[in-house]
Amino acid sequence: MRHARLILASCFALAALPAAAQHGMGGLANDAAVAIKNMKIADRNHDGLISREEAEKGPVPFIRAHFDQIDREHRGAVSVDDVKAYVRSLQPKPATASSANSGS
Image (cartoon, rainbow, N blue to C red):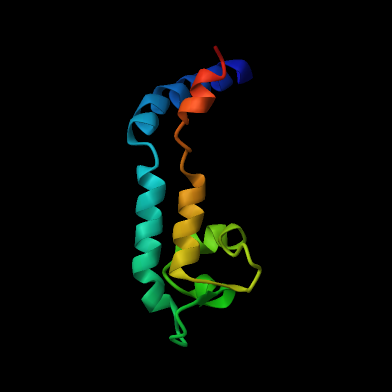
């Protein structure tokens, strides 16, 4: 019975892959866009940065969930540019012509 549940769960996960692949980074990019929009609300001291405390209390679940990865300089605060850089770092890099030809 346990194996049947595992197989069933795997089938559902595999069925969802084409839809996720079709949308690519859409969900993540949308979460980041909402977080950037809500940063003004979360920025209680209006310094243009979101501290960990502001992220914990504000409407920025994406920043809260990824705070340590976004805060690459370990300042204890993140900016809009930090969030954008983090999202860019998650996007797949396009293959260059030289790397595509190196396999031949």
